[in-house]
Length: 233
Image 1: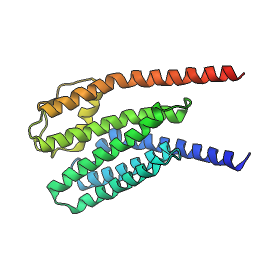
Image 2 (image 1 turned 180 degrees about the vertical axis):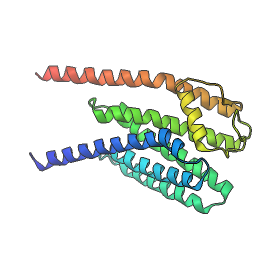
Image 3 (image 1 turned 30 degrees about the horizontal axis):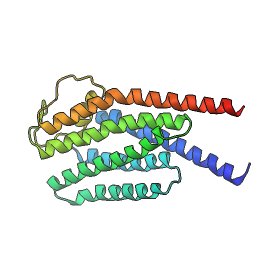
Image 4 (image 1 turned 30 degrees about the vertical axis):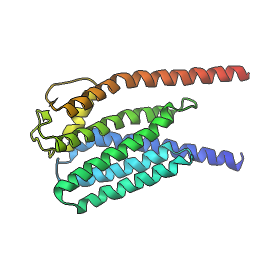
């Protein structure tokens, strides 16, 4: 085995490990943290900052492919992590806005990076499938931050929440986001403002189309790979 082959195997193991860690962190953020941490507490905010930083780092490792553009992604995510933690030094109102905007932008950036890996050319691997699952969960988290930001900027944007100034805990927005993404629609929280309704409509549309598009892409890659293999024999 040549040095290049050993290096490629090492990079592949690193990507797989990063994807596993990313998926575990996303599961903790969406399903575990709301059960074990008191909402709107200091521990809650620290846990969210730690998880966001870990998600960005593990996602970057999982999606790394050595391209030139990866360095810019890495710098942007590092800047997002620094700004996120510096939000602790801001006043409460400003800090909440920074807290939400940085999370929204950094997770959107990570989603874009994963999207290029999920829908790009190549073969169907466990890393690609894991990336598709992670991307779906990231969509829910991005929209949760977007809903929270709208509730801060436009008062009374949602009905059914205990507060109307964006001060309710993020877990409520995560819940509403995934309910909308999966088009369950319990009706306990309803968007009222135009911005909130537009976001909800777009998320519901993505929730319907994303599984079909991912499945079609994976099937096309599998068929293309099988055809290429048969032509080479």
